[in-house]
Image 1 (cartoon, rainbow, N blue to C red):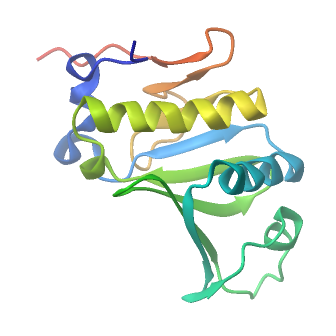
Image 2 (tube, rainbow, N blue to C red; image 1 turned 60 degrees about the vertical axis):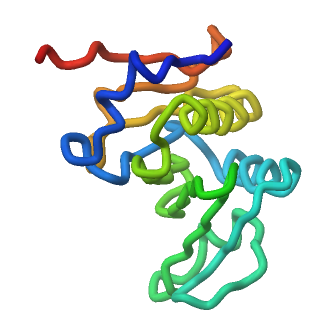
Length: 162
């Protein structure tokens, strides 16, 4: 059975109202947690592309990318957990793993299931919550996320009253 049902959460996946690139994050992380995610990407066989300043490079270790010089090009990791579903990881700080997904790629139950499986894989491996907020949200009111105790992705807020 699906973690979430499309009809219950489709309101959040409206790119006009909610933004096209909602923020996904794992709070309270470390360099070691980042490395666990990078290892998971390889282990799962997900297609990926790592780049810095537009130059495609081999995927480095977490400590290399997180502690690069201040004037270095911004690193960018695109992970495809399924065809045409991309998660774009940003390496801003060791203390939070953050990435974006494109709502336009996540329309319908099948694509929602891909997202839930992706969040679950990361959350289980880290043993931590993986939360999704509105594009540009401050992280204080995530809409959905992987719940470690329940071992599933759950809706965290009620839909707006229409």
